[in-house]
Length: 138
Image (cartoon, rainbow, N blue to C red; front, side):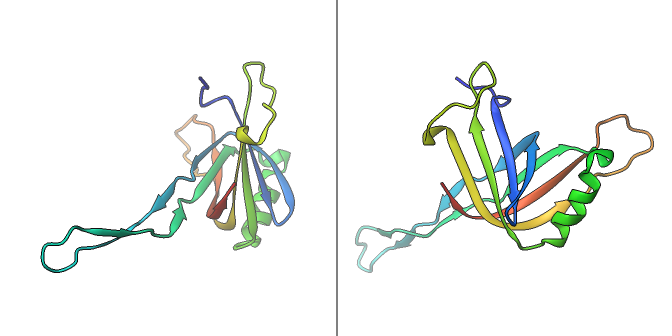
């Protein structure tokens, strides 16, 4: 059994390693199969549909003095660039597990970059996120 925290989430945009991210969401697969009911009350027939993937979003805390401000502007300028989100399962000791079965790679294009919100009355950690429109999953 794995906890949600037992993951290493990485982002690569236009070939540039954008580091480790705190969380990811999305990436599920959907297949919309075709349906047809022939006349004369014949049994319904199904045909295989195309597989599509949900967008994947990665989020992390905002540290502008550690380069996040520049990175956010750079990724934003890459709008539509090829991007990959790599999610690796970690063992109980925090070390990545070896083997392809423990790694999921979502590849697509940068869909959006969300800068952190501001609120003068909040002490919540500011976060920012990048969304990838997924075209393939390995």
